[in-house]
Length: 281
Image (tube, rainbow, N blue to C red; front, top):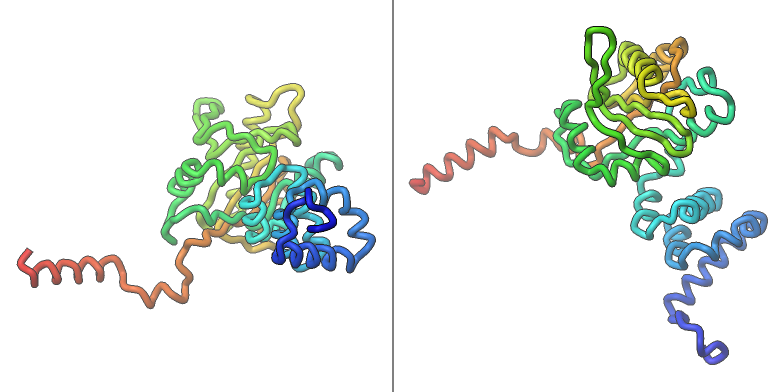
């Protein structure tokens, strides 16, 4: 502080963080050299969050690069680390390698993740597709953040006319980097092979009716409660359209181990009625 009186921020706590930051990156000089320019671009307290919450240098460097690329706030950065984005990104099962050319297939695979974490929703374990869809639209900002950079929301229950029948897309997006439409189909049940067939039909319809001359092939994202990986691989192997399959989680859903330990709604209502009757109300 005496040496650089015009520079602020040399509190005891901050000096400890500066030393911790230096020691963290200095352990692997080649990574530190690679990250140096990026480390100084993002805000200081973003750096502190990263070294405090990341367990490896590779993970930390990933969040440094993503913060710089997308301009994440400290709150968004913290959420992305705590939700395990680094471990989930690019992990969705897909047939992109067979249905898209190499540059597009690699980027499309990296765009999807598994699982998707909808910890901003409060739904009962018995929620259905329509309730899930409505809740995601009500929290569209958080949903877009979880989908990742590049997604633009186009609508829900989008009508598609095929022959004499009308079909409805659960959710329709456009991806700015992939330059294509993305159809999201929601399923609150375990994956079944027929789900992929139906989404394949929707992708064909969107390609025929909505896709422009400069758009890449439409991609489908099927979100299910759970999946048997081998069944899913079999189902996707002969699908002609680019399709990704992932699961979703609701962090606010009550764990199975606790459900039997809490009273049911019926029990609570009965207890309330008895209490009111005893008080003469």
